[in-house]
Figure 1 (cartoon, rainbow, N blue to C red):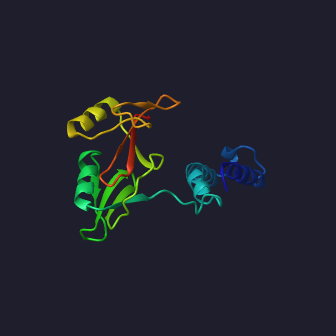
Figure 2: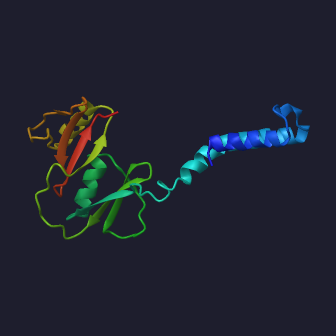
Length: 182
């Protein structure tokens, strides 16, 4: 039931009392109807959305997981280079490090016997920063190599919509894009 249905019910109740003006109803009924209508107007959009059959069980993104050959080295990279905040994980071991990458979103870095493969740049994580120039200075200070999509060092890729992008790899070879998308 959404706002249009609520309005229809409200009008139906008014017609049941054979009145077109809610102020002609007895005082308590009029107040109750108005409060009910206000409550429904503010609550129903949320209830309608949550009960939508199409989205009721729609998956939402929760986390990405990466395999790390050397967990300490890879975790230090994400903490220092990307300045990600470590968050609690339920394992309480030395094989996992979790990072916050957004509200309710995490990056799980897991120690493992990762296959040594060449990762394709088209498969990458992407982060946005307010100033790509300031972030590139940060990378330069840390000695992290970066470049455009084609691999030209210290070059910026400009996307068709004007967003500036750079690419670099973590210690395990996974590609990372950083851009200035708003």
